Every structure is written in structure tokens, then in C-alpha cells.
Length: 286
Ligand SMILES: NC(=O)c1ccc[n+]([C@@H]2O[C@H](COP(=O)([O-])OP(=O)(O)OC[C@H]3O[C@@H](n4cnc5c(N)ncnc54)[C@H](OP(=O)(O)O)[C@@H]3O)[C@@H](O)[C@H]2O)c1
Image (tube, rainbow, N blue to C red; front, top):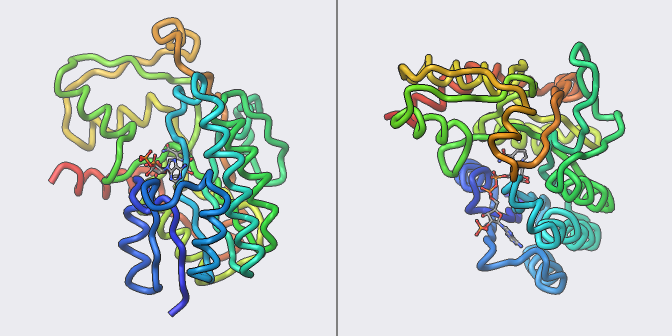
């Protein structure tokens, strides 16, 4: 059995991934309490002790709006600490799988077009900036996969779908942004992608790793209400209108549609976002 060091094993993605990987790998999971990735010596010691074939980093500072006010801490966790892991991976000949985000792009790409892995990032939010530093550091590992995911939701964590479901219990109407385009992604789909990357071992590098298909937060919410059988009416608002209602919210890219061609060329085909959402809701609403 190959050894896996799973960092951030109690997060929304990490928790589900741990359960799945334990069936096929010898997994050592760490949490903020057992391994703070900003502690370089601790990271090196843990990797030297486990000597994993794969190191998977699911740990991050994920509060997008929070990154604007806690930039230093966010950059430490999302950016600088990733170098500790990459260094330890290189020293132990481990393959490093790091999770990144669509928010590394500025979103100014024409809405008729989609982002490929070779396009130049240009983050517009503090979160995106710190995650881009993380990508640059992850690439210092000799063997690495950077998986850019987006609009992530899963059973084991706070996320947009849960927030909308909760709001629908107390609100007859909701206002949701209609001019930001991307791919909602379930943690189950992302786990499947990670497992296939581990099995197929395609060429090292960056892979866009989301569910298939594109939508807006508004249309995503309409679908959530429809599938969950909620009567709440969803109204579209522009990013500018939303910002006026929530001045402390971070800017988000209008176009964060990621091409999955590279992933598909590696033999990995993610399911459609609507199907993944329906499967998730079946579990969430049980
Ligand atoms: N959620 C999204 O919409 C989304 C979108 C695109 C990309 N991503 C990326 O996907 C990955 C997984 O996200 P997620 O939603 O599963 O995140 P999550 O649920 O917030 O989990 C992140 C975990 O990292 C831990 N952590 C924070 N600081 C740490 C440190 N210094 N050392 C070790 N662990 C630390 C957190 O612990 P505490 O909870 O105790 O702080 C938490 O358990 C992240 O890389 C994220 O950037 C997420």
C-alpha cells in the first residue's frame, strides 16, 4: 500500500478524501492541531517521519472575505507555508498534490471564452493573491500537481449550498449575483479527480479540476431551490449591486470558467455540475 500524508484532513474536502483514501492507501492525516503547516520544522519532521509517496494539501485559509482583513495570516497559510511542504516533498521524493482555486484569475476574459491552464493568472482578491503565491511555491516540488477547483461544496463543511438552503427556511426572496460565471464543484467530484490523478499519474503540472459545465451563482441558486423543492424566489443582482449591499465583500472574478480539456486528455472526465448537485442534495436533505 502506498503511503499518503493528507494535510488538512478535517476540512470539508480533506474529511471526505480521508475516508475514501483509507480504503486504498496507508493514510496519515493531519489537522491544524497536529501539524501547523506554517511551522517549517514541524512539516519537515512529519514528512521525514512518514516518508509518503503522496503528500496532499487540503489545508488553507478559505474565508475569501476574511483574507482581505487577515491578509498576513492568509498569506502565511495559503502562500508561504506551501513552500515548506514542497521542500519536504522534494527532500523525500514525494509527489505533492496541492489544491488551488479559480480565483487566481482576474475574470476579465471575454465571457465567450474559458481559461486554460497556460493562461496568465492575475488575482483581484486577497484570497486569490495568497493562493497564487501557494501555486508558485507548490511548483518548487519536483513532482507536483496543482489542482484548481472552484465553488466547492460538500457534506462536511460550511458552503454556499448549505447557506442558500438555510436562508430559504427564513426568506421568501433572495438576491444572488448573476454576472459571475464558473463551475460549482462537489467535494465528491474533486475527490474522484484526485484519486484518478493518483492512479493515472499524468504529466506533472496544473490541472483545472471542477465539475463539468458552467453557470452563475444566480442560476446555481435557482437550481438548488428547484432540486430541494423550496419556494423561495431568487432575484438576480449584479456584482456592483451586491457590493453596495455588502461593502466588506471581496471582489470576485466575473469569468472564472475553467477549461477541463487537459484533465479530459489525461483520461479524467468530471460529471456535470447539475448531476453532482442532485447527488449531494440527496444526501444533505436525508
Ligand atoms: N471552499 C471553496 O469554495 C473552495 C474554492 C476553491 C478552492 N478551494 C480550495 O480547496 C481546498 C479545500 O478547501 P475546503 O473548503 O475543504 O477548506 P476548509 O474546510 O476550510 O478546510 C481547510 C482546513 O485547513 C485547516 N488549516 C487552516 N490553517 C492551517 C494551518 N496553518 N495548518 C494546518 N491546517 C490549517 C483548517 O483548520 P481550522 O478549520 O481549524 O481553521 C481546515 O481544517 C483549499 O485549498 C481551498 O483553498 C476551496
